[in-house]
Image (cartoon, each protein chain N blue to C red):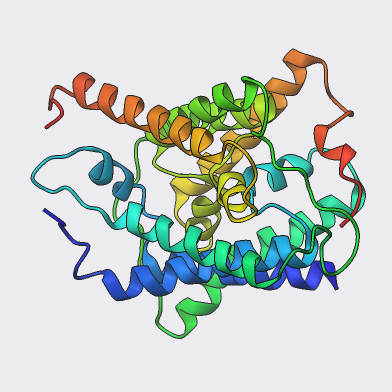
Length: 145
Length: 147
């Protein structure tokens, strides 16, 4: 029932801890939310300093796997959805973030800071994802178990 | 200094995704579809991240202001219905693509072509939103004016 969780337990624990550490340190030290979508959005305009911080974070995120690959670390992507789904999903996320600001990284930082209603935002994000996954299951004819 | 910290946090975050495999789009489907291959990895990894971030913020104490100075970026979602609708849209997009932007950055660093297409599409969606709302050049991020 737990699927691959037990075999991947250690790496998930270490990886999740590093991600949480990054979100916590970023907000405690700089005040920024670890929302990649908002950082990408700040590249389109806004305050200069914000864009510079965003570029630094984005650069670090992309550089990490490059550096780790040199030392033989890294779990490659197993499978990617087709291009139409990637484009549709990306555009919807871009629209959503610009429209109301919600993002998973923002919810992560908000929960850590104990900002209000983060449970509702997590619920909305997971509900949206569940509907999309369910619809894909229906449309692909495979059904949803 | 703030930029150095942002770079270091980006490195930490990217390393976390790459080590855990949480950037893999397949994890979302296997987490949300309760079939024979139900896989809780995504939920567990996110839970660990949330708990760790909460511990870090708690250990830092009651500092409302960032330790390196300035003001904290406001967290969206604390009032009104827009963040909820936005969260639903974000989630729906995540469900289609399998990526969130944070994960896609790490995957892009592994030269996954889909992650790069996804990130460009996120940027495209934002530009479309700005065109629709006539908000070009006056970004909501502008109210947060430091870095």
